[in-house]
Length: 79
Image 1 (cartoon, rainbow, N blue to C red):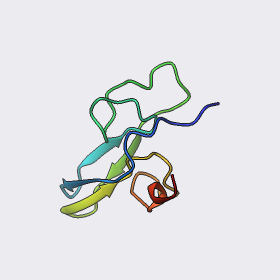
Image 2: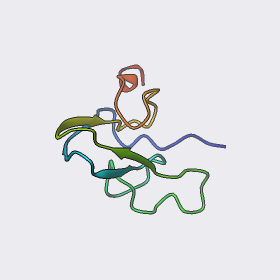
Image 3: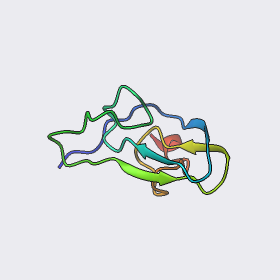
Image 4: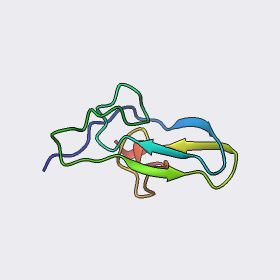
């Protein structure tokens, strides 16, 4: 098993809408970062659902190393 591709060494700040689902790319290969475009097909990775609890800005993980699931936890600072 190999690790995910590092899409970028910074989070993706994006506005989200309460109640809406967003499918975060876990493999790092998507051309639609930070969201899944199906590029994971044939790998051990699958997209991960993020359901927004409230309207606002969230910071999706770009390095794919976060211990906080789909959201940035600062892991990119040690890469």
